[in-house]
Length: 69
Image 1 (cartoon, rainbow, N blue to C red):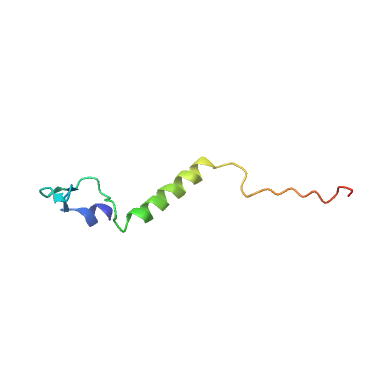
Image 2 (cartoon, rainbow, N blue to C red; image 1 turned 90 degrees about the vertical axis):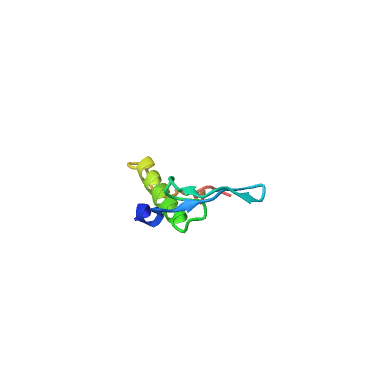
């Protein structure tokens, strides 16, 4: 889907107020692309799942309610 979204895309680079000649886009996800945040979230979620697989889940809390005042 990402490949089809960008297939045949040409880009220009703005430097010092002037644009370059158009050239083919080859990186698949460009800055400002509507897909970039979604793809980042998916990859980041997968990375975290892989990193913490088999670990303790959740946040632990300790209470000091048994102590005498």
